[in-house]
Length: 128
Image 1 (cartoon, rainbow, N blue to C red):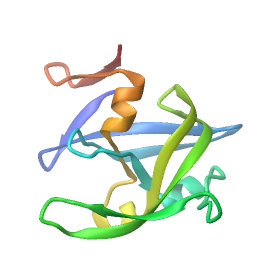
Image 2 (cartoon, rainbow, N blue to C red; image 1 turned 90 degrees about the horizontal axis):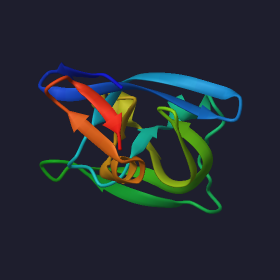
Image 3 (cartoon, helix red, strand yellow; image 1 turned 120 degrees about the vertical axis):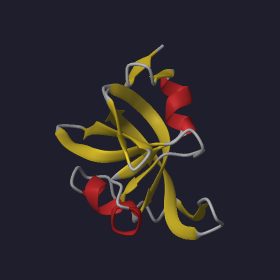
Image 4 (tube, one colour; image 1 turned 180 degrees about the vertical axis):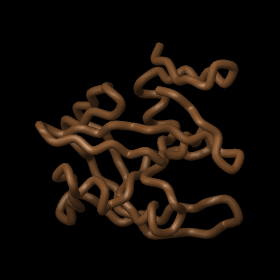
């Protein structure tokens, strides 16, 4: 995965697959300061990942400066992010595109689970 810098922030493109459906997200923030991964609700609905109001739960996400937004946290089964298959992954869904301009945010939970190695010398992500 290649990293590009936009407005001083590391941005990546990520393909997300579920079953036979896939969507390419071109504006995903790579955020080592964010504990959890969140994607835009409308974007993931294109591949059949929608709010699970029975098993999920609402959660408040906080950003720098103390601003907060409501999102929805739920387990997503059998999803592939950047070629890494995640059998059961706790994911947040929210309004990231409209409010922040990102398709999503890759958080530390994804990085830790997949062994991400961030190489800012060559502006790429590798997996360990």
